[in-house]
Image 1 (cartoon, rainbow, N blue to C red):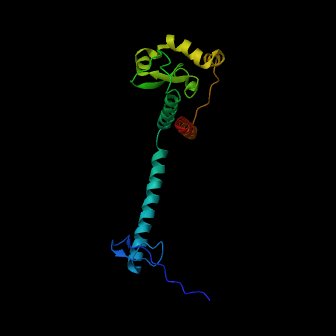
Image 2: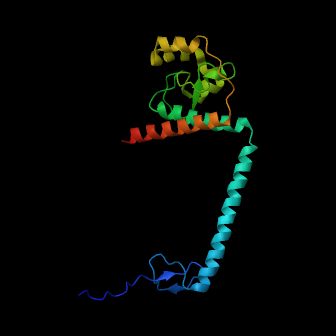
Image 3: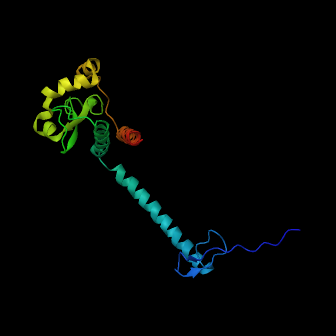
Length: 192
């Protein structure tokens, strides 16, 4: 014959609705009684409706954002990935290590070659002085770039590039997500 079991005693909790201390009868009980449960459920429904309303508003706000917004998000993630990838390398142009700010400098400019904007061979860590004030310091950039990526990849970069059709929001979001994941994987790899 089985022994009768005692009802389990749970630690005292604070009521999520009125704030009083109570001993729960069930493990996941959040409120002290039926009246508080009714008010808590009403408030939870209001919170859920507010969350849905905010989500809809967020979607509507994203729908009116210009394409430039998504391009900038993708470019920011791409640049962060390039700086993380080349973190241990010196500036591609001047070859210096210093404590200043570093950019992700493009060899072929984004303005004249938009199809190479997200090409990893075209973009490398570059100090802000070389990138901003020396117009990417291309005279020094070229030999260092050839040494880094090799002549064949450099020739592909310099040669005619196929024109890419106009990218849309979803394309830029995909690029952003891709480089965010790549940067995260790179950080984890370096930490290991």
